[in-house]
Amino acid sequence: MNDPHQSVMDIVFGRWRSQILYAGIKLGIFDTLGVVPKRADEVASELNLNRPHAYRLLRALASLGLLSEDADRSFSLTPSGESLRADHPQTLRGIVLLEEGPEHYAVWKHLCAIVREGGADGFVREFGRQIFVYAVGAAGYGAVFGEAMSSLSGGETALVLEALAAYDFSGFSHVCDVGGGHGHLLCTLLATHPHLRGTVYELPSVIEQRDMLWAEKMGVANRCEYVAGDMFTEVPGADVYLLKHILHDWNDADCVRLLSNIHKAAAPKARVLVAEYVVPGPDTPHFAKLFDIHMMCATGGRERTEEEYADLFERAGLTYRGTWYPASRLMGIVEATKA
Ligand SMILES: C[S@@+](CC[C@H](N)C(=O)[O-])C[C@H]1O[C@@H](n2cnc3c(N)ncnc32)[C@H](O)[C@@H]1O
Image (cartoon, rainbow, N blue to C red; front, side, top):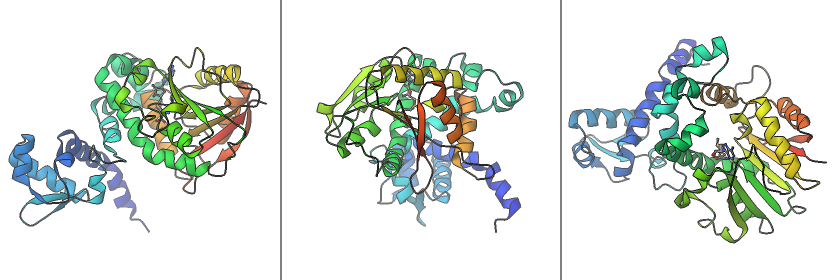
């Protein structure tokens, strides 16, 4: 059984770990190391760092299991450390830069005030603008946000496809991923189902990040179109809609507005597949219950239960059909139909 005192201490010092990790990435430590050990002094001079402090940071990263330290102050990457290199195929670099970077760090400090007062989210309180408006204006943040979404996508796409392994796409031809980011999920789905074509519908600022788009890289560019637009104004016609981490960004009224736009544009028997961290019943620990607090701080959105998604669907004229889960139940795919 867990020591209750130690459990609290682990929570208290959690941010130290993630800030040590952030510094390692931001300073380029993971990209300069490999499997062959390199001396701390060498790392410090390559990255232009203070030598004694660089050694202490490397030692702390090793203590977290991200690096291995030899007796002569040489360091190499562990398998976890390798996943933090920019060139790793499933790199987690982007998500660290976003979640521990200055903007997200700053919005969390408003949590107590938000819980006391309700009202504006932490992004609005800190920067005076809603997160996606800020992302368009602050190009640096927009790029970090985009990299983070792609970085998360590797693992999440696998979870979504696992959950939908038995899903029958044979009666459908056109899938639209609303707010689909750089298209990792949609392009993987198209690669898995060669009869499908797809549309990634996104803000212009995201589609302009040409080097980050997945369609060419995954060999599905002939079946995947990137369309710029505003999902609160209209969405393209399709017979399957994907929304991964979209509804959780918005309050109920905005979600109903978006789902109503989908209802309006959708083919008669269209399906809507909402991929989110679905909140399970009381007293079941789940990442969704933590992510929910992040949404409170960052966007004013929320994570929801199956019943709450069913209610949003109903208010937009859609009918809830059920929820698909991967074995881990980390994410859920909540399904609705137009007819
Ligand atoms: C949390 S991200 C999720 C991205 C992607 N679905 C994923 O799971 O990686 C939300 C996305 O919604 C997009 N978005 C926000 N407002 C939008 C709007 N009005 N119209 C279209 N896309 C929008 C953002 O640009 C962002 O890529």
